[in-house]
Length: 180
Image 1 (cartoon, rainbow, N blue to C red):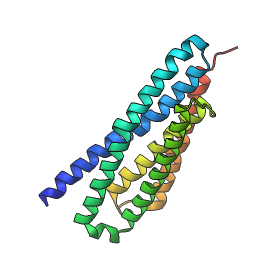
Image 2: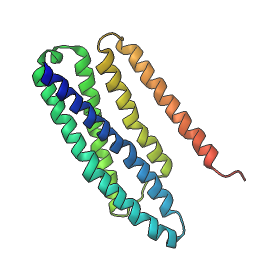
Image 3: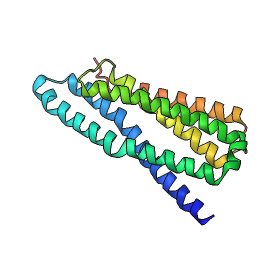
Image 4: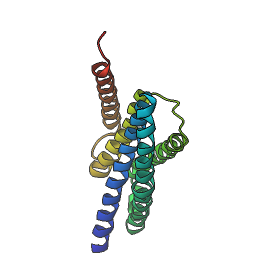
């Protein structure tokens, strides 16, 4: 059982660093969209630096952390196969599947930015950034509370969080938009 605690600790460490990358990549995308709208001399300085930051974050932190978090998660399931008989684990795995879809879609955005393509707005990427937040909340609550919270309450809580995040982004946009 001692090995279990070490594997769980490593899994959590790499989940944290993986999410750090997933939180920051869309933020760098917001900055790139905003930098592209600046005067050419400024954009020519900012965009290559932001792309370098994005590339290093994705290749050095985000992807390796995601791989290691997944490997340690599989190891935990090998050590504790009884979890696969519990409904909370299957719901958690659905959210992990959504996280993988989020990861791969973010990867396609990442590749577009490296090619210098900016097809979406900064506001879109602010909203996109919250996708990983919602998944993180769902996964953490499922892992900690397991079957103690009815899934309907959890779903309403997640929807409420999504609404609050969207309102926050809209308020921030209104705050940032200059008054005429």
